Length: 279
Ligand code: C2E
Ligand code: CA
Ligand code: CA
Ligand code: CA
Image (tube, rainbow, N blue to C red; front, side, top):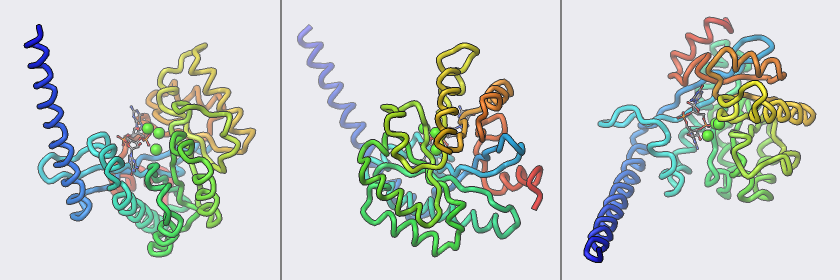
């Protein structure tokens, strides 16, 4: 048994080493991917419950890897955050999203909001306010159309700092969304402290919602509280007509999910826009 334990330890040591090597390699590749502009944005529409039309999009990053194909964020975003590479990558993402927003605005798709995900490392970077303003200036994007998504845990990590940064960026008219609402430490206790505009109910609630379920109670209460604070409520992960109708009945404001579209490249999003918001 003792021998076996030793072998297992050796095995563990080896695979831990292998994992370390893999991580270093991946980190190196991410760096190269940023340099070679291999990261691309897909866009998922948000639908306004009142009009039934697309009122905005969320930009979601993908990695067009030269040998491994199109990679979703779970393959690289955590390591990008851990290594700090999310900072240059995040700047590329924001620049591209703003550039696309200007293209759509000029093409006549008016008032389409552009939601961009920010990670903790990005928002806590000293020069983040200047970076965001610089990109807005350089691309000529209307600041009112930019919607920065942060999560509860990001906001909690360094609340005072996050608060002051949000306030500065909002002075230009930029909007903020609280993403994945309901999944963090939670929530209602400091919700009123955050100067956000939109609250996104996490897809886990939407998808587990049944008549009389805990999730249903949470969604109803969240929408009511959010509205009393003048927040726009976005339901994520809406996959079925039943989910859509339930959230509509609870007075939700916007829906996002596979029921309407999965995230798609810019050109495909234009096809969706042409089917309703005619320029
Ligand atoms: P998120 O911000 O919560 O984004 C929503 C995720 O839910 C997306 O996954 C989207 O494709 C997926 N989704 C949308 N509708 C549905 C639905 O009806 N059903 C289901 N099952 N899923 C749906 P994705 O694109 O794989 O992104 C995963 C996460 O990666 C994002 O979660 C976000 O945390 C992160 N991420 C994506 N893009 C960026 C980025 O540009 N910057 C940063 N910092 N993080 C990003
Ligand atoms: Ca998001
Ligand atoms: Ca989310
Ligand atoms: Ca999430």
